[in-house]
Length: 178
Image (tube, rainbow, N blue to C red; front, top):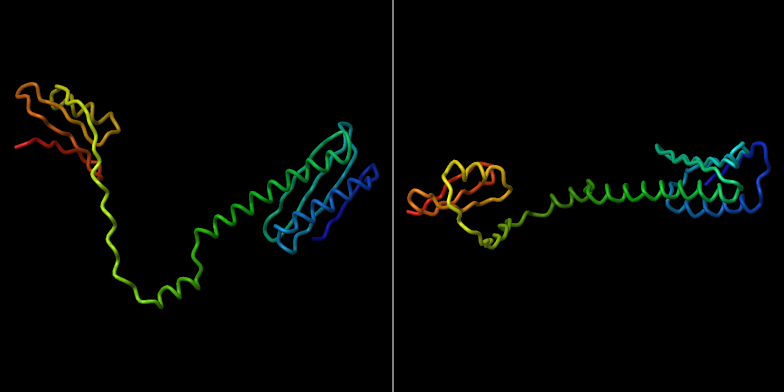
């Protein structure tokens, strides 16, 4: 990695320069080979300002930090850039994980397809609830405002158990025993 250090209105400490080179050398392991780093250190009223800019391919990482001394400002700015680089690297890895290369697709199409295995059926879910007494309209109103898939209730006129059931397509069905 090519590193360019520029100082304005001050001279760069040997310790700060050494820290910059070491930290950027470590970052070079996760950056593309053609990455370039520019570090600008300048003296301002509020302290020492350090700007770090790393350019590679279509991406640029930049950070700046202000501190009382050069070494602290350099470390803070490099910490911020390192965090950005690591975050980008993790994002790229995650994207690559979810994409299938063209080589794999071609190899997969050359292999004869096996008979698809039907998915396993889920075991029936059991749930215990009390069948309260309510009219059909009240039950439908209560069911439409809940997130449950099933509502059991008894009609007060004939004490018959009825079940409201929400299908996967969103429609509602009333089940009554015969």
